[in-house]
Length: 162
Image (cartoon, rainbow, N blue to C red; front, side, top):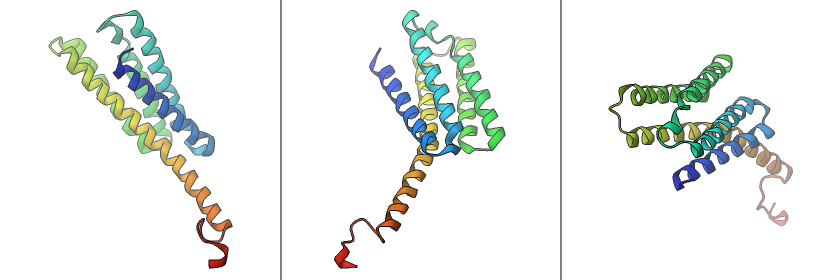
């Protein structure tokens, strides 16, 4: 596994971790955690497939994965109207256009295709991390408010100074 693949694998695991934490503390983060789980699963499958095939044939399954994820994200947006799901669906749609340009045009360069595909994937991870992180930060904010209320105004206020 090259350094870029390792970086994306670690970024995928971090995104999944943030979204799983958000799901554990905020039940309304279930859809974003589910989306992160799907992305992590499909990324893992892609990494396994890439060990058995050389470029560009190790990327033949990308359009099917992206179509599946686009459909799921669009469905999540239809159900709840969450912005992150629509952004995710549009990012997967843009990846489908990239695949079509590369696989059907034949004039596209492999390097350009991989670079654009990686940029879309990074944007997808960022979208999921921001969505899950928002839920997690909301939970942290609520806990800090509870602590502030419990200790009478702040952590750093000494009892004698009150």
